[in-house]
Amino acid sequence: MSMGAAARDGLETQLGMDRIVLTLSVVLSVLYLTRTRATPSVSRMVIKAGSTALLSAWVAIRGGPPLLAIALGGGSIGDAFLAWHGETPFLFGLGSFLIAHLFYIRLFSESGTGLGRLVDLFKSHHLDGADAPMSSFWRASVAVILVVFFAPILLSRLIPRVAKDLRVPIVVYTTVIVCMVLAALTMDNGWVVAGALMFTSSDGILATQVFLVDKESAHLAWMPYAVWFLYYTGQLVIACGVSVERF
Image 1 (cartoon, rainbow, N blue to C red):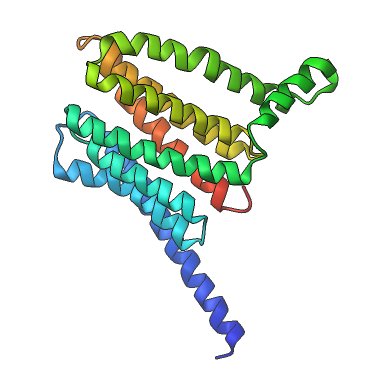
Image 2: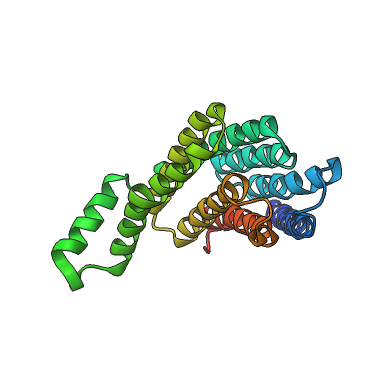
C-alpha cells in the first residue's frame, strides 16, 4: 500500500471515529434532557458529564485547539458536580466552569482582535451612522448590554438571596463569564459568538432557577430543560465554530 493510500485510509478512519463520537455526545445530551428533573444518581451524572466529555474527545480527534478540548473537559467536570444537589457540589461545579471559561477566554483572545476592538466598533458606528456595518453595532451593543445591564442586574438580585459564602464565588464567576463573551465578540466567528451567548443565557436561567424562583413556581417546569438545551447547544456550537473549518 502506498503512503498516499495509507494516509487516506487513516483520514477516513479518523473522520469515521469523530462522527461516532459526536453522535454519541448528541445522543447522551438528548437522553439527559429526558432525565433533567430526575433524582440525582450516578447513571444520571455519567450521562450528563459524558455528553460534554465526548465533545472534548471529538475536538481532540479532529485535531482541534487543545485549549478548546481542555475547556470542554473542564465543563464536563463541572457537569459531574452539578448533577448533584447541595452547596458543596455547586461550589465545585462553579469552580470547574470558572476554570473552563478561563481557557475559553485564552482561546478566544488568541483568535480575536482584542477588547479594544469592541470600543472601536461602537465608536465607528456612532460616528459613521448608516455607513457603518451592522455587525459592528450589534457586537458593541451586546457588550454594552452584558456589562451595563445583564451582570449588574443579575448580581443585584442574586447577592441578597444567596448565602454569604457563595457571594464572592458568584461575583467572580459572573465577571469571568462576561469576559468570556466579550472575548468571543472580538472574533469574526458568528458561531462562537452565538455559542457563548447561549452558554451565558443558560447560566442566567440556572441562577434564577436555583436562587430567585419560588420552589412552587410553575416556571420550574421548563427552566431545567432550557438550561440544559442552551448549555449543551452552546458548547456544541462553540466546538463546531472553532474546530470545523467550514463553519
